[in-house]
Length: 126
Image (cartoon, rainbow, N blue to C red; front, side):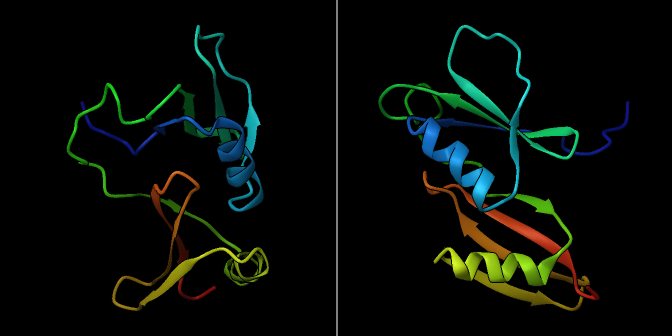
């Protein structure tokens, strides 16, 4: 077996509607088809791929998971850097930009409404 690439991340949230709105308006994803699981949730799509699976929970979304945080962030690659930065600024979204010429990317670090750290990587030549 050989691993190809990351398929999706699964994020537990007690703010499902807020999270769907944020992933739609800030990251440009869309909520799409999802199996009929016996719990609330949304699959957020980037193109044809569901890349973020949101799972609605009641109470603290950390209950039932390990007590120590092990996943510091997840990253997505993208295009359209200039428009994305304008969108973030226009929305008043907090972000940090890192230019990483050694690896040829410009990285935007941001946090969803639940505080999950995400970075979006753009080709530096864009």
